[in-house]
Image (cartoon, rainbow, N blue to C red):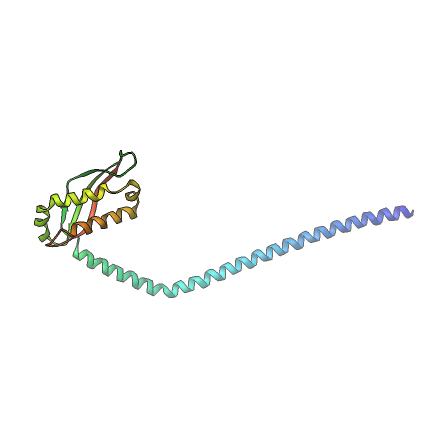
Length: 179
């Protein structure tokens, strides 16, 4: 009989341990739910605080947009200057195997129409400057947008050194093929 009581107490102890383990799971679930709730509430509060800051800056942002539009209109009123198209350029690019070349068609934007006669007279000089610059470049230098922008600036600076009646404001690549 004593043995039976021991077995019953052990069985009931096992059931108590199971009940305790189940209770531990419930506590763990409650803690996780509370943590998630705190995170969600914190996120909502942060969002509301940040959105209030942005709303306070809204008049400033719209004012900046208006100023940009005004500036854009003034540049549009100036318009794009007269264009001076150049013939197509086909040059070998610097490379290890020497088999890469560039085909480019370029238009020069003049600051005034007074520059056109000078460009007509100096077409050979301008083409030589451009060919020298293009052929000194590698494929890697001119395939990126930054590389093309740098190339344009270099061409503009070199051409403007040789001009007296005005200057070239921008260069536009109307064709740019690397093979």
